[in-house]
Length: 416
Image (cartoon, rainbow, N blue to C red; front, side):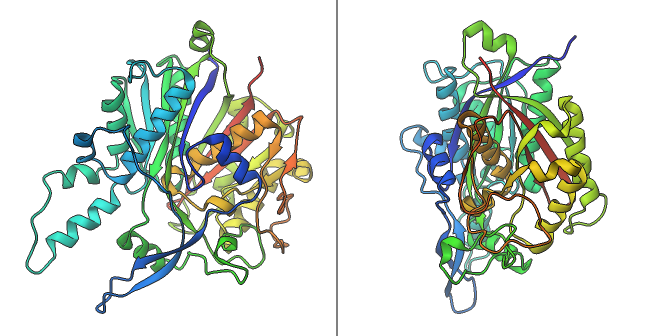
């Protein structure tokens, strides 16, 4: 069977910048930061709290999720179901509250219901112990977002969850793309969900010493990828779901595609649990370009994984130069994490959605707050101000993770 083309026909977002993709992109393009200080329980003997830099979502499921269903959902699952609703509605595939029955569901989620896990142990370890919820174990599952999307919208196709830290949703989208391209499916919902902004999960991140400190100009400027004075990453939350369809399915119903997925590459560093490796990252990018059957010179924009850690940004810059050679000088590179933070299992999906909008609008979002570029990240990082790029046709988006997992997607502007 010949390989089939795969198009994105719907995108639903629940993000730190809101739940309307047009508005979200406009805010990201303008460099408007969603990062702020949030009071978090310090979990010490004094019962005190502390302020942390986070990129949270102002979220409530409203009437989209029945009350009885919410009892079995963690925050990440609720956001995923709402994002899926927006994606299906935007694609025209939501009919009488149901989605396409035979579609596949491919979701990424790093930690699952961490909020529910914390609540469970707080009750279990209380003195005296408090009664536990019968739904507690079910809310914790990382597969919760995918499972609840399936049940909410009557989708009976393959239901897959990828839990690979920060590449979770990139791999989910990539594997859904492969399933459609090779004829296993005509339609898939793919993306990610993450909600780790609770005291227990945040305490673990603090111990890693990778979180940003507040910038002198304010909390909103604290996520500073590629900047010489960056201090680390800012954690965010949210969910993004994409509707993917084969070319035949798109044509059969006269749908208007938003963009095309043309390449996917994945690799492992086999190097170090927390230290990134340029060799593995280069391999993922090269595999994605080979999969897309295009030379690197066709790529006009790269959405970098760059989280704002000193080593991570420098290693990615090196890998980009290794991959693109002399074309690097003509390549626009930016990190939208500078305004929405790092959504871990949902990060790749949000960055893919924003890259789709860049292809659609011919506008490249900036790396906000990049006032003093690190000379070791000597790329065209689109500092501070977004850029018009009407000729933009191909874009690449990178995702790299603790554990040495790497995933890259290549997108193409959708032509009528």
